[in-house]
Length: 629
Image (cartoon, rainbow, N blue to C red; front, side, top):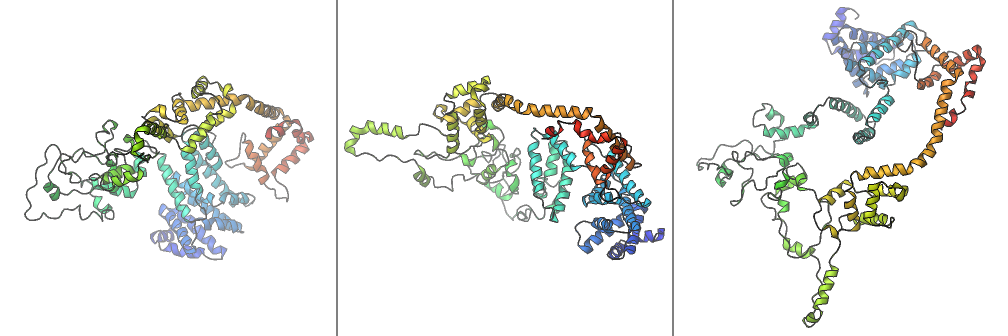
């Protein structure tokens, strides 16, 4: 099978991959070694041969009901005891990676191996003295280093192969910016994925693809195309008016309900000729019966405009006395009073009614936009008042009137009853929730001064007169976004507002009021924070000076670097001019062939032989322990 004829036969016969997968499912190491060597030869032979090797792994994955296609290779490498079988497996990994022509795909398949815990296995294999195995280890390291250099598009000094480095690099970029909110949301969504669930593999692959495409976006239109779901695209097809030849095939399922209205049947025999549409956009009922238009898709009714109403039939037959566009949604706020939505066209009650303290959405945020309120408005264009018994509602929810006094006493007590009625009428308008208003008022009473005085202190930045505790409390009661909109849109008598509402109205008139309060709190707490941080800062400075002036420590670090370069000689990590101090923790992982000994033990022995005083470098760093706390 190592001949060109045998390799061509496998390439031309994809069914042979099943036989190779069956041969892998054996307990004989020599048979598995021959299959692995054959797969390596296929990878090097051609791209079609590489695909046959991958197909073999897929066939084995399906045969054994494995979750990952490359698990067989990693598990065999971990459990193998023969050096020649280990070498064959590692050679197959290198052939599979190196034969991948595209850099992105090459990194992806290498990361698949790394995700299956390949690196710890390779670290154990580095202890072997087999020359062929060490050659394959060096090939893996050199190719990985080359690919990482080619793909290194990140900031300088960031190890893109380190999850921790990349995470903190991203966090450092978006910290204290609006982007940290969606970043946290992304992490929370990813945290919900259970790695033990096989469906999570699909979720991770999909997330990787979508994030990669998101990094290539240049404008909002590209983002809309990326986020557009297939169902939404299907609904959009009804507006293509036959210009897209693929429209019919892609939307059969979604148009099953509208099939009776979209294709017009032949006209009945003797209909009268259609009445022409006049310039005003009105049409006769006859015309509406002859040419029924397709109904708009339910998901897009809020965004449909009727600029061509004079040429096309209106969506629904209007009443004879009304134009069909009297309630068409428009994004222009100045016309909101002229074009009301059906939910706004209600009769005026005759009695005084009980009120609902809700947060009103401005008209310009509803009209002409795709939202639930515009959708229900389009559904009730012709009969906004038909579903509610207004008289019954008025009787149920009107404010109670005091009982009428007897006729004999009306004349003598008329003036008193009018005064009592006026006293019972509410004299204060509450926009905030009752509990919220109570909390704000309780806090304001701590100042023992008027709202104007509090606002003046904030404008002047008088943090010392307010104090840190009150400033922290003030930050907690600041108005929310919906409360801000409600306060700004209030157009009633502001003198009748409650004390909490009046304070908020005065507060939002102060430019950057939240930033002012935060800065005042920072200034108020600065002295206390500095008295707490100053000893720690001084300890860190002194510890840094000790490290920079400690000659024995520098000599020990030099010996560690020299020893590491010796071990890494000929590899990508060799010939290092220096290493990150965090890398020193890995020295203990390099175990010697002698039991109970690692690289740090060896360096300590060499330092003791050279100069015994080198091992006393810790005595010269008296402030290091305090700096670490």
